[in-house]
Amino acid sequence: MTAQPQPWSQRFEQALHPAIARFNASIGFDIRLIEYDLTGSQAHARMLAKTGIISPEEAETLIQGLEQIRQEYRAGQFTPGIEAEDVHFAVERRLTELVGDVGKKLHTARSRNDQVATDIRLYLRSEIDHILRQLRQWQRTLLDLAESHVETLIPGYTHLQRAQPLSLAHHLLAYVEMAERDSERLRQIRERVNVSPLGAGALAGTTFPIDRHYTAALLGFREPYRNSLDAVSDRDFAIEFLCAASLIMVHLSRLSEEIILWASEEFAFVKLTDTCATGSSIMPQKKNPDVPELVRGKTGRVFGHLQALLVIMKGLPLAYNKDLQEDKEALFDAVDTVRACLEAMTILMAEGVVFQPERLAAAVESDFANATDVADYLASKGVPFREAYNLVGQVVKTCLAQGKFLKDLSLEEWQALHPAFAADIYERIAPRQVVAARNSYGGTGFDQVRQALAAARDRLNDF
Image (cartoon, rainbow, N blue to C red; front, side, top):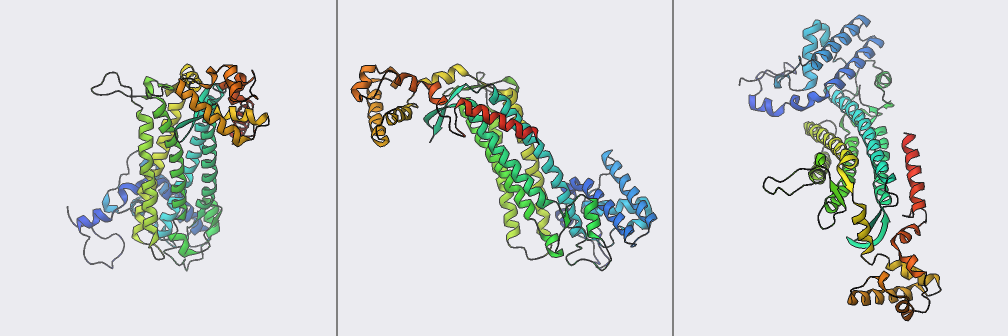
């Protein structure tokens, strides 16, 4: 490969070493920003004409040329290589080929520093909107599933030990709430993404009489950056997005872990449909939960991008430094990963997971998850709760020694333990009643769950 000519100025006498040209080039990944680069450049051209820096006719020529590049790119006819270095030079070079010397005027009062900062914000703003829509669909899928399982019982766990029975809908609604927080975070971050760096120049602004508020308005930004140094060197918004993306992945990964456990023979709470599971290359009986396993694995990938960008930023002096070229691949891959995982998990929960109510019912009948309700029963009869708690612990110990559950004790055995017990103890410790009784706000009681479902559906309909 021959040495590459320098694209930026006549300051350099020698061509760039081919290996350094490859190392330095970002066109292989930042071509992804081309539509945003073209849109930002069109707004810049309009501003240059509005302020009299170029003529209206020159601006129209530039705008039409940029639009032709857009169409060429969409048709697969514009595929610049590393000789262009980055998407910005690639566009400018092609524009000059199309419209002649007027194309060289486009970069007036602008630097690649504020240009790329603008492109990234336009890109991320659009992707956040896509992810917000995906989160809403994810929530709707969970709500649809929850509405069909209000009175399906599932064991609830703490420390991965049986704790208290729950409405399955209540369990699923916990993930709806997590996604709601994810959406809130992204909407807040979008506000901080939606600030225009265009016109900040390399770092100090420009001597030309530009109108940064005009370009900000054209591009849908709420305002321009107030400080030119901050405008070109700020990546807080990208770090914030990666934080939010990491939390989305945490939530998807937690449910993935539960699906993996529930699909095992040891739990058997769900079955996986053929459309969302794979098999083994040597064990024909296997059905593997690949979707949740991949989501669980990809979570660490997004965490890594967050850590990488934090490390990149921690030692950078103002203003722009080439280190910031590394922000794009991390950001692009995090966006792709979150979107792919949301799509896959939405499909999985909509059509890939079938809950097994009989198995779930048997599970909640065969443990001591109603022990707290026995203590509550005694407390309602005037027995101090801590005394009741200790007594029930002894009862459980006795039952375990005899191979019984609480439901198997006779009324005489109950009353021998404490005279406060009466025949209504059996109703109080029945799993369905145990769940129904927890009717405090936000609890798993069926009435509360139905209210929570209705409230969640209203929130989604308002979006």
